[in-house]
Image 1 (cartoon, helix red, strand yellow):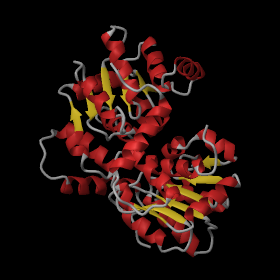
Image 2 (cartoon, helix red, strand yellow; image 1 turned 60 degrees about the vertical axis):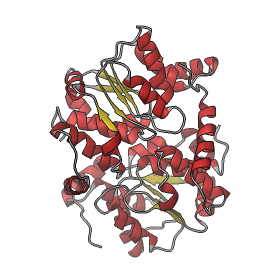
Image 3 (cartoon, one colour; image 1 turned 180 degrees about the vertical axis):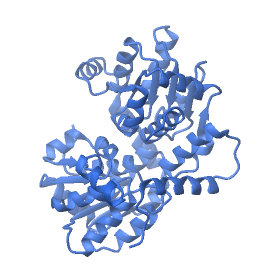
Length: 208
Length: 208
């Protein structure tokens, strides 16, 4: 069988096809690198219309990443999809607390999701960079903690997916005046979240 | 803010919404549990039309899972999305070789993808259950190895995603007469692959 076997060749060709098929848009070059990577990850051009990049968000995220900060994410899958080499070069660390024993016990006792208990733990630690690819409840809870003046959030990537609360959680977080990228509506997910983090990292570090 | 905070409540409600919105279909109950879980994972109803479940595939996968077999997958993300508790209850193990040192060195030397080298290693080990959520090249390579009589494949889940080779890789594997589930066209991905494996496991084991 005849098929392209060179990894970088496949990615370059994919981005070309996406560029040809995505049609007119008003993204600048850095925004476009994010949007194309999301489409590359989902094979779904709707992300062109539902990915919201707030003005200044790319710079804010980049500045944090270049400081080698700790990133909190709500799923192991998103964590697993982030480019390890790029993270390492930036000196960043990614953590996800939803499976931690103390979080599991706390969530069970209080009848809340592990995602909520996990984000509370991250806030207590003073984490400033948040990536949500799964749990609307984590995003709702983060907003509550911000309103209570407990969370020092410098960047949020809000991409929970699903049918119950996902769209609403993103509408709610958008009311906050902080740098953010969101995926509006029901769509999003851990692969989308990871691809956006990767795109942000590739704007600030050589990925190879 | 008022939002549902009980994890199982959210999933049950989500499945209800999906059932209401998905419209007419001809899936049987077990097929439907797979399709709904994929839609739950992607918030994308197109999966109703592009997910192909070959006759007998659910039984074949279930019989293998109940034997506690080793599952090969082409991405860490798909691995990370599979329900650990269900895997453990079934006595199954999931492996992914794309980051193994020998695989990385071999791929670089031969100018092929790590995904191809990884699936070769799995075939050499005699693995019979394959899950592809990312790499068309892995699926192409697996078919070649089957045609060469080297691979003893008992079940394939083919859900590579993307713009270069993904659709073709699934068309090619469908020509093989083995139990399989595929996601046709460009869509698919590691979250989709993991959700199908989870749905197959939940048909055979209590998930809690």
